[in-house]
Amino acid sequence: MALTVAAGAPFPASIPLPKDFQPEGIATGPGATFYAGSLTTGDIFRGSLRTGKGAIFVDAPPGRSASGMKVERDAKRLWVAGGATGHAYVYSTRNGSTVKDLVLATGDSLINDVTVTEHAAYFTDTFAPVIYKVPIGHHGRIGTPQTIPLSGPAAVMGVFPNLNGIDAPRSGKWLILGHSSRGELYLVNPRTGASRTIAITGGTITPGTPDGILLDGRTLWVVENFAERLVKIRLSGDLTSGRITETFTSKLFRIPTTVAKSGDRLALVNARFDLGFPPPFGPGAPAGTDFDVVQINKP
Image 1 (tube, rainbow, N blue to C red):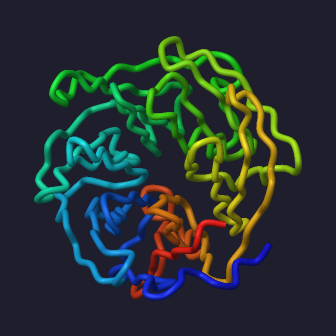
Image 2: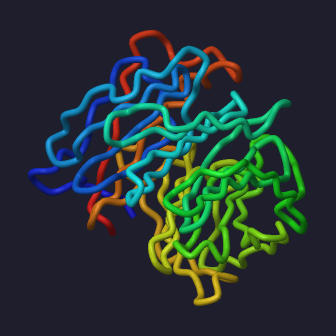
């Protein structure tokens, strides 16, 4: 199904990001606030979905990167997966200051995405069959990162890219992981790392394209980057199966990678990977490339 109408007035359908920003992740905060991160600089852009206005909020130190991200609203913190740096970063949503610089991996890694639950933040690594857990303790205290090896189908590494998107119910009882090259979804026990494949009916997820995912009640949204589709899946009560109910395309999609929700709207960030993957995986998009955030009314 084609999405011909983006967001109703006064919400703009497309919100420009800085030229050459090379975004990948997006998160939403209270009100109409959104955050988008740069893979190449680690900078964080903060804007308004209502007005389309925004500016660089975090001018990250050299050497940082930003991929998937989530807002921990109660603690007023933004959790950011650090891509090929092996790190994760936590920023204050009050003033953009660095709360924590966490080392998750010391070898080859691609810290791809993050979800935040009541008691922990969890990260995926596209290069390794593990999840990284960062405990969140009393009064929001951030604990020491832990590596949890995966078992079952989620642990099987294949053709790059592997594990990618992650989300979870607020309770954190289960994690949902997406595998890009195989076009599969997994239900993972966050305590043991044991996994099982979520059985999908009603259609297929396009192998090689699944990127960010968003759990919204029993609805799971899956962004298919190079297919330029948004897939809507209705999950069973126990999260072990799901049915594709609709798929959506839009002329505004330009290799979207991640999705976040704000009220009755969805916001997606266009990474434009068709113009080049950023270092260390490619030369990046040509100088002067424009990037944007697209928002649509929730179908």
